[in-house]
Length: 341
Ligand SMILES: [Zn+2]
Image 1: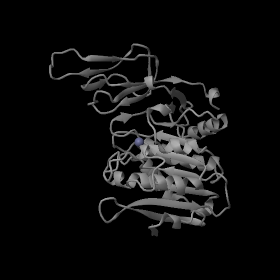
Image 2: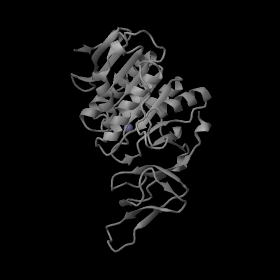
Image 3: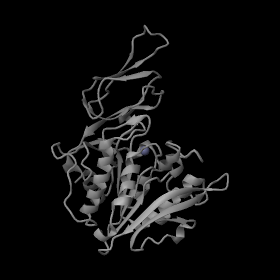
Image 4: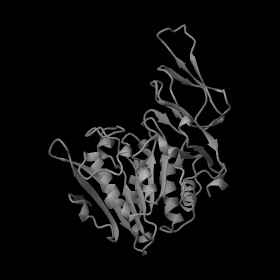
């Protein structure tokens, strides 16, 4: 049964067992609500200091995280668990309904809305709820994304450069539990107001991910999110059982770093994009990455996009029609694991 909550202060995060809620955030322009799904599970085997908070649907048109977190809402059995897990499968519920990155109610990108505002528009009030009511009940925060409509990544988990060495090494270990092909250390300077920014700044162990792209459902992406979250629960002792390697025959995840803005290369002009390398591939300096075609003159030579530096392709534009200024590709450096562990 799902309880309807009008006053978020009424949610009892300590209540034993599994409880499903719809948290009602009133609309700004009319009578009605965005009903944001929330499941709180307190294991019946006793307390655990490492509460885990999992988000999907921070961006509405990214589905692997929504599915992985929703499946956990159904599958986790409090009788088999210790500690607390908080699951929010569709954080920007209005964006999820609309199959949109941002909320159609206020045009706000939930992943730029932190720390939120109790008197702001609906997205800011939801992020403020997360910051003030949800974050205090967990130490580990996982936010599952999928690239979105334009950008595409190799399946990866991610975190920012973290000055505190103990926090960074524990974060890197949690990122590895998803056993993705790539783990990306990404630039804090590219954007602000991220859910993960806020959780990191509070000292929490915070991991993001990119599990697909293009408003599709990537099977490997859902499996990575779902099994990875179970691995995190096992790692911290909330669940019994061995850590599962998702790709037992594959190599260890490759750790790469794109922590400088100049690693994120903008599209220099409009055009039809023809990539000639794949995401996750190695490129040498000056290697051809793709071509931009101008069909206003079909006899014109394409504009060649060549790598400015050697490295691993950590992200590439997905749609065929990038717009001047959008990030076209990211080339990242490989980092030895000993640097972060
Ligand atoms: Zn996203």
